[in-house]
Structure formats: C-alpha cells, structure tokens
Image (cartoon, rainbow, N blue to C red; front, top):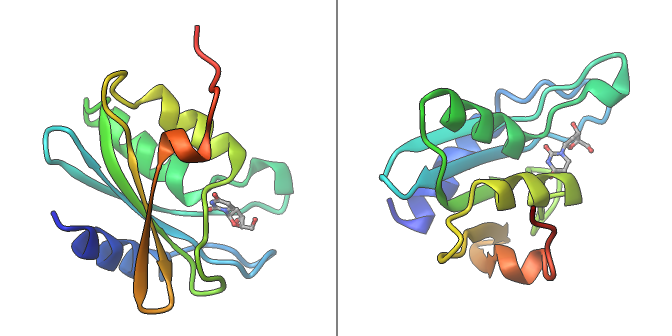
Amino acid sequence: MTYEELMQKAIEVSKNSYSPYSKFAVGACLETVNGKIYTGCNFENSSFGMTICAERNAVGSAIADGEQKIKAIAIYSPNQDNCAPCGACRQVLHEFCDRDEDVAIILKNGNELKIYTLAQLLPESFNL
Ligand code: THU
C-alpha cells in the first residue's frame, strides 16, 4: 500500500476511537513485511491507566494474525498535526521491527505526510 493509503485507513479507524476522557482520538494503520494491513484506534477506560493506544491496538491485531514484522505504520489524530507515537508505543514497535530493516512512521501535517524512521524516533533503543 502507498503511504497515502495507509494514512487514509488510519484516518478512517480514528473515527472508532473510544476516548471519552481525553477526547483525543487516534487511529493507526500498519503494514507488515508480508503486505498485510492492520488497523487500531485508542480505547480508554475509567481506570485511566488501562488505556490502550491506537498503535498497540494495531500491533496486537497483527500479532494475533501471526504477523510479527512491521514495515510501516501511519498514525493520525484529528486533534493534532504530526501526532507522533508515545514512548511506550515506540518500544513496542521496535519489538516487531525487522532487525535489518527500519519501520517507516507516517504522520500527517496538514495536507502533507511526514515520514520518519523508527530509528530516528527511538535512537539507542533497548534490546535483549
Ligand atoms: N494515544 C495513542 O493512541 N497513541 C499514542 O501514541 C499517544 C496517545 C492516546 C491515548 C489516550 O487515549 C489519548 O491518546 C490521550 O493520551
């Protein structure tokens, strides 16, 4: 899929966000190295710490379907330009990134897409 198409799916799924507490909707759409596509949105809880971010929701769907290598992920919030993944999600993405490849992180800034690599957003990352 093109980055534009991934972003379009992230925009669509952000509409399903359950975020009554923060009122901050997020959608994510990832592509695996096998070309499979998974989406996720954030969902919150009255016990705030149980909130799941959009990115981790998408990653969970990929894992449940047997896909463990992420190639690219588009992230979108209608509330904020350039909605970048939180630190926890960066670490989770890193877990499912091919060691020799990098993950493209696709953000939306107005009408423009901004492309980062996970290595840019998570330098000197932790590995076991
Ligand atoms: N959120 C995400 O979905 N992804 C991120 O990377 C950052 C934050 C959600 C969590 C919460 O529902 C709302 O945005 C405000 O923090």
